[in-house]
Image (cartoon, rainbow, N blue to C red; front, top):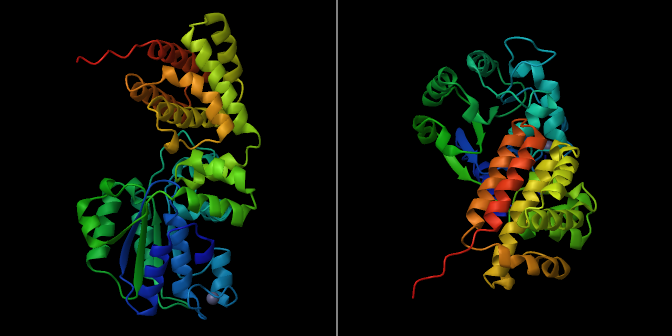
Length: 382
Ligand SMILES: [Zn+2]
């Protein structure tokens, strides 16, 4: 990963380059931000820049032997730790070394991935990802290796939230008395879930959700997606590039989703049970990823519909034709039911990630939505 390939976050890029150029790289850094904000991509670009033997003013060179190893994520001074669990191949005592080949591939394919994507690529999306006790021992062993080629040994720990207490304490000890020429890059989604003593031992860099313009530019420049579609996907993904990458792979899905969504809303509003049963059967058959995408769109469309209801069309992120489609429906989404609708979609999404039965889930959700759409807002007392 080169800096120029990392989406947005220009200010962070510049400050990291500045750290290296002024020879003031702090030995323990915590990059944290929500899914799809690019913290992991940035950390790998940073590590590469530190080790590059022919640094350019604003990026690694791409051609030195260090860069070539980084391109394949096989540099001997760059260690990576990530959550794992047992799967079909590794039946006990799973640790990172067992999955390093899969990890390199997953990270190369999509440096914006989330924990669920990673575990899914190992076929264990229903399990928890752990950074266990044994991993703590491995970290110490790897830090005791001599550096081969670089100014630093770099230890990147992705999702340190998944460390157990024992490993976290071990890490803390190392952070308190760091070995020479060692750099820790912790990459987390949630800073609060880390021990406060680890937080205070690291220099924190916060990543925010990307702006719509940053996501759009990335989709156009890196994936050659046409302008209109890139904007549409950016609006739906709300700053999460991982989601944007997934949505951009689905042609025609977005338009179809608005129509599907409105059809479902009509059946729910009228409590049309026979039609709802047919709809639920259809949804149950489209597969989990499509079901999750549908719910993501439902959240987005509900928010946009509420803005139309509140008469704030200037804030609505939809094309004119989609706006027209939603306008009629907007009288049914209001301040009295929007929070509960959004919470119901979120809850359903969460349950899908944990393999809930799709048919039961969409049936239950349809009944809930039916009640909520028919809820009238109480008139304000004058
Ligand atoms: Zn280089």
